[in-house]
Image (cartoon, rainbow, N blue to C red; front, side, top):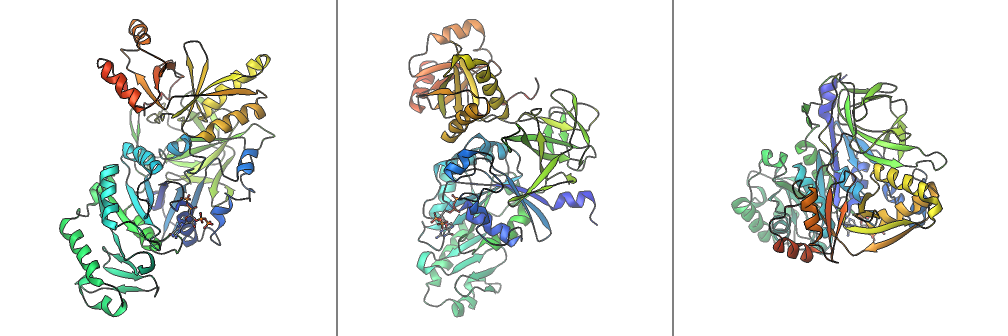
Length: 532
Ligand code: G4P
C-alpha cells in the first residue's frame, strides 16, 4: 500500500491545447488506449458524433453533434495516475477552455506539422505562459509532408516566444517518414519496421542505422542532429518546470507513432501536484486538511432538475464522501454527499480522492467559479482565478417584457456559473461577452428553455476589452473619459461595477491609447475577487 504522499507523487494533471484538427482527439484516444482506459480507439471521437449516452443534457449538443462541456479522463500508465482535462476546442471553444487550464499542472501543445502554430493554440498558450506551467510540444502528422522541423522550432520561439529543446527528432516525413530518434535515450524507433534500435555511444553517427534504414539520406539526419547539439538549447529541467523551455516531440497520433516515447518522457518530466497559492500563503498537497477550488460548473446534467456539477480540483488532504467542508465565500458548512469522478466516458461515484484528483460534486446552486472549499479551521481562499477577456459582444434584452424577472434571474445565474460574462452599459442595457460563438447560442438556448425567457441578441461590433485603472474609475475622471469615447468604443461595467472600455479592434485600441497616453488601460486577465 502506498501512503498518501506517494499517491500524490503518482498524480499528473494536464490539458491539451491545440487548434481544431491538429489531432488533439486522436492523441487523447491513443493515450487512453495505452493506459487501458478505453477498449478501442474511437471512443473519444464518438462523443462528437452521435453517441450521447453520457452527455445527453442538452438538445443543442445533439443537434450540432459536439460536446459543449468538457470532462476529465483518468487513466494509469507506468505507475502514474494521469488525468487529462478535456479542453473544448472546435466550435465549442469558450471561457471554459481557458478556465480548465487554471486547474492543470502542465499542458501538452499539439501542433499540425504541416500548419505550424495556429490562432487558437496561440491564445491557449498565453494562459499557460501566464501561469508558468510546463508546456510539452507534440508535433503531429509526421506521416504526411510537414514543414521543416527547424522552421517549426523557430516558430515556437518567434510566434510564442517559447524556447524549446527537441527530445525526439523526426527521421524524414511524409512518404519518406522513417521514424523518430529519441535524443535522450539515444535510440531510434523505426516507423515501417515498427522496432526500436538502441544506438551505440556515437548515436546517429554510428553504423547501426545504416543497416536498418536503406534508401534514406542519413547524412541529412546527422547534419540536423549536429546542428541541434551545436546550436540548440541545452536540456534544462529547471527551465522546463517553470514553463520557460518546451520539450519537443514528433510523431503521428493517427498511426500511434511517437506517442509512447512522448508519454514516457512526459511522465518523467511533468510535475506532480505542487503547492497552490492562497491569499495568506500556500497550501501544500501533503497538508492534512482537505482543500480544493471550483474551476468549472457544468449545468443541467438532467434537464428535469436544475442540478449542476461543480468540478473541484483537490489541492490538499483527503476527500471522503459525505464529509462536511466550509465554503469560504459564505462561511457555510456544506456536506459533500454526492460526488463523481469522470473516467474516460463513464462516471463513477468516488468515495475517496486526494490532491491531484479532480472530482465533480453535485450542486443545487450553491457554488460559483473560483470558490474554495476546505476543512481548515481558519478561512481559506485560493488565489482568485483569472477572468478572460471576451472577444464577442452582444446586447441582450427580453423579447417579452412581462418575463423581465425570469430574464434577470437567468442572466445572473448563468453569469455566476461562468457560462458567459455579463456587463451593463450606462443606459443599463445588458451586454453579454463571450470568447466563442457557441457560448452565445448556449446562453440564448438555456434562457429560453430553463428560464422561459425568450431573448433578443444584437451583436455589437467590438472585439477587445480593457479595464480602467482604479484612479481612472473614480467618478470625476470617468466623466471626462466618457467624453473621449466615440462610436467605435463603448463603456460598460462588470459584475463588480468596474468600468471597462470595449474597442472595435486592435487599431482602434492603439489609436485610443496614443491619443490618451495618460490613461492606464489594464490588459485583460484581470483577477476576479473570490470574496463577496
Ligand atoms: P482535433 O481533436 O485536434 O480537432 O483533431 P482530431 O484528432 O479530430 O484530428 C483531425 C483530423 O486529423 C482527423 O481526420 C484525424 O484523423 C487526422 N489526424 C490526426 N492525427 C493525425 C496524424 O498523425 N496523421 C494524419 N495523417 N492525420 C491525423 P478527419 O478526416 O477530419 O477525421 P476522421 O474521419 O479521420 O475521424
